Amino acid sequence: MCAPVSIRPGYLAVLLGLPVYLYPTAATLTGIDTEAAEVRVYSNEFGYDPQTIPVDVGRPIKLVLDNSRGAIQHDLSLPELGVSLKAGAGQTADRRLVFTHPGRYLFRCSVPGHGEAGMTGVFLVTTGGTETPPAAPTEPPGEGKVDALPEGLSRPRQPSAAPPVGRAYAKTVHVALETRSVTGLIADGIGYRYWTYNGTVPGPMIRVRQGDTVELTLKNALDSPVTHSIDSHAVTGPGGGAPFTQTPPGRTSILRFKALKPGAYVYHCASPLIPHHIGNGMYGLMVVEPLRRWPRVDREFYVMQGDFYLTGDPARPGLHEGSLTKMLSEKPDYVVFNGSVGALSQDHALKARVGETVRIFFGVGGPNVTSSFHVIGEMFDRLYREAGTEYATNIQTTLVPAGGAAIADLKLDYPGRYILVDHSLARLQKGAVGLLEVEGRADPSILQAVPVMGGAAGHH
Image (cartoon, rainbow, N blue to C red):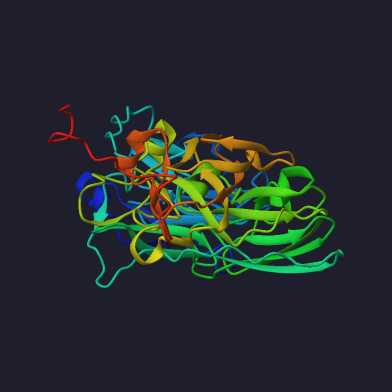
């Protein structure tokens, strides 16, 4: 029998004196199969079966990670000992190893978000009924982590509204999306590692005509940390296309569907853990124009609200990851338009002129927070509530649920700076604010300040 090859133990192993030995792969072994007891661990979204595994000290085992029940890639990692098995959807992976000391050896799925969602377990290594020491309490990995802020970091890019389709016939439309990890500023001095479609937050607006056939190509970047997919609410069929587009890093999927219903529809990543992907910025709008076109407007804008959850103290300068713990508690650190605080201000403020009509395609990616969308000082002359077919007129504020959208038309009658908000106004402090700057001549018959006679305002 081949001698075991020792691997260097991790920090915890050094402290506890828990060495582990790893055998070479099965292809290079002879005779070990008859001596190694198979330990099969099934993985799915999100758990292991079994989660507690008793093992005898000194007994070689063949550890098998069976992902035949999983829809995406999972792994089984003993992080402190440097052991990791990775298996794609429908696949298995195995390793030979032997534990030489009793103890509790914690294992988890190291795919971002999976361990935090409960994909954990423990090897209970005993010798003749020896009691094992209790496991030390551990903080979920990354929950308090804040790295140094890279130099020259800027806000994530944001897309413009896609132009109107401008045709009266249906055709096949080809759409290409690439899922990429992007590091950018979510606020001044506060960096965040986003997951994106095409490098922007929100993802690009996809615009087609009712009756079009859409061929959507989804590529997952090779350096992506996880499997990604797309669920479009414009798709008629199971999962909005998600079951057909679960795409591992470095791979490509193609989805073809017919755009049957008009409206503005949210699309988002639907790979487990779904809110984790959405909460990292993976959402956008797919606009399906009706056969009878919407009324013409002078300008169109694309705005999406999202809620973000940061590791550690959100006010601490540095580079943050997403916090699954905060997300599951529905306690966002930031609620923002178009991916970051100030994304719709200064050079990126929405701009128009007096007399123009503008259309705002407004969506809420979520994953948790509903928006009370309002433009301070304006009314929605025509509002397609939840982006439906019928419209209401002269609406002040509209409720847009997570995963929903609205289409709002405004006729601009007076110049100045108009503030876009979520009228759950405490969210102003979390970043939910944007600007619409309107140029032109003021009409005093619409609005003017009236001088107060006899001195200071408030005295008559």
